[in-house]
Every structure is written in structure tokens, then in C-alpha cells.
Image 1 (cartoon, one colour):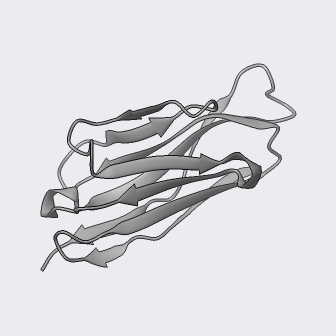
Image 2 (cartoon, helix red, strand yellow; image 1 turned 90 degrees about the vertical axis):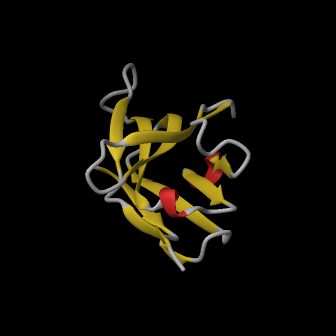
Length: 122
């Protein structure tokens, strides 16, 4: 079984910073793309940033220049450094990863974390 465990959310003032972490554990053979998504109250879940196994990144326009996604393949962990936070960044942030296991080596399975709350408010 594979699990994704997020950490690092919390309450921060506008202009502040937070760093989210997401560690994958279980019977993992390899991890393809990893990413962060968010869902604000009353809105649909949206992409924040993704990173491929080779390190190529993609960001939502709303976070470009403020957020940085990175990963540590040795630790099966993806990070999201969030700077210059705005009230509109308030949401539950979810980690996602496309993971290959011993029973699914040819086609990765998409896994989600349980989510971590980020609140930007003065």
C-alpha cells in the first residue's frame, strides 16, 4: 500500500512564507510526476505546480515567481516553498504523485494525500 503524508500547513500573515512537504511511503518502485493542488471553499480543485521525475516544473500563473516546487528522489518527497503569500492562496493543499509499484510497474497509479490547510490572514 502507498501513502502520501503532507505537512507544513498553517496560519501565516500576508507576505509571509510557508514550506509544504509531502513524503510518499510504501511499496514504491519509482515515482513519475509529483505535484501540488489546492481547493478553496466553494471552488474546484486546481493545479498549483508539478515536477517531473527529471525535474521539469510547471506552475499555475497565479503562483509563478512566488512558489517553488522541488523534490528529493532519495526521500520520495516533494516540497512546495511558498513566498509572498496572499489571502487568495488560502486553501487546502493536496499532494499528488504518479507511483509505480511492484504490481503496477508498467502503468503508474495516481495517489493523493489527505490535504493540509494553508490560511493567509492578518
